[in-house]
Image (tube, rainbow, N blue to C red):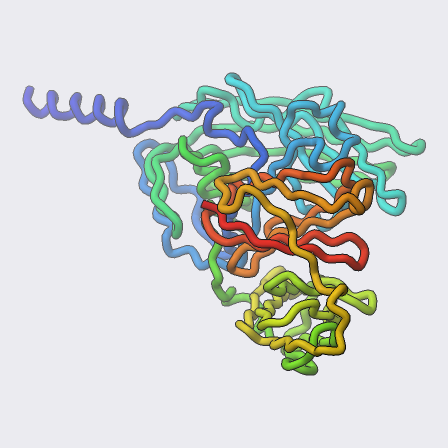
Length: 434
């Protein structure tokens, strides 16, 4: 009898304290950037069930990226009416220019209500609202729940039809704790089997997948997720993502990235040429320079293989190059204080960068930028870079007043560099986020 009593108590304890329930508060519901780490290692996804301990702490990272959730108005005005009040996610699809998914969160579910694509050449942002939404999560989410839905939408553009039709089957097939290289969480695991057909004109593409997501009650994205190749035992993962913070690590599957400059000690307004010296053949380049008092010239930009840069102020500059190989592996080379810029008395001081008026500073989230009157109704570019040389914000907009507000509340405390550029005129500043 005593043994039965212990068993009963254990079951009640697990029921009361072991399993968690996921509600709408665990879904993304505001504009935010959330960092995740990527790995191409494989794990066995067949292990699941009640009170399971998943230990993925030994996963080897290969790259990082962010889920960028935005309000429709911050993506393109074409989406404001169709997806008013919804939440957009940059899908970063290399095969579809400017592709976004739009979501709506409620107490009953978190659903995909449509997508947005940018038509090539004419650069036209085009919404495709779903006639039937894709129910990504249904709330409250508990162990043992099984749910399914059919979803899709269709549009006609310039006489060409495009459509998405699909079916989702979700099963909450496990609960317990999951340990990642970042943290340990109480979680539910959801297996999603997705069968989707995408059609553009006469081109038909099957977009089927099996996804596994470990969901906690405290994060707005899955704390661990994988795409898998289905098999009878549950599947072997092909791509892994997990919630993380910014890390400066070297991808063991990526290239050894390196670069040089034709000169590292020059004057203000002199030209410096950078050369990619990576032994492996790279498929993409991303250059970052701190501080942000510089300009790319000769038709080059931050994604050029060998950019040409003019430095607009004295001091030392840190240069970093993020290189990717065709298979997807990438690494970053950082050279601290690599370029030294000295003052040349013959330089006209009026060409120096002007200082941005930022307030409050220090700030706790919202930062106001005061413009010069001459910049009103001009096309401006705003770039924000953190203290580890990571570009976290880059947007073009037309100013209709002499002030704008940046929301940095989603970022960690520290020093941030802000650059605003209008044609050849550069304004710079820095803000201490507390």
